[in-house]
Amino acid sequence: MPFEVVDGAWHHVFECSGKRVAVEVGLAQLRRTGTLVLVGTGIERPRLDTNRIILNELRMTGAFEYDEAGFEAALALLDSGRLPTQRLIESADVPLGGLQHAMQALSAGRLAGKVMVVPEVGG
Image (cartoon, rainbow, N blue to C red; front, side, top):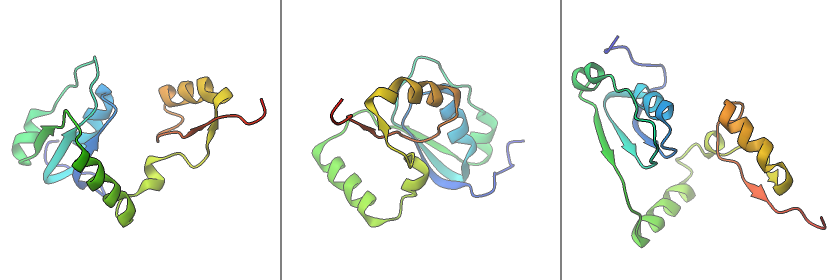
């Protein structure tokens, strides 16, 4: 239903993977008058609920390019503690030898956040 809003809906959602399903889920996470910012690009085109967009006055915009000022603002935002980074980045580092397993887990949805890959020492 277009007017239904999930618990804990957000005013802004940034979708950075470009995956079709992530764009669709990002749109579903918006509260009324929210904004979905598309940063990632992908091959599969998302299916958009235009009724939800219109009736809830949602906005969608794209961000194609980064500039030096954008990195400074992003670092300041990360430093502010206002972003739930614990939900965005997996808690365990992945050794280089475990990268393929991590990629398969991400693809299967067993991992949801970004993984930090660290080189193996003394290998």
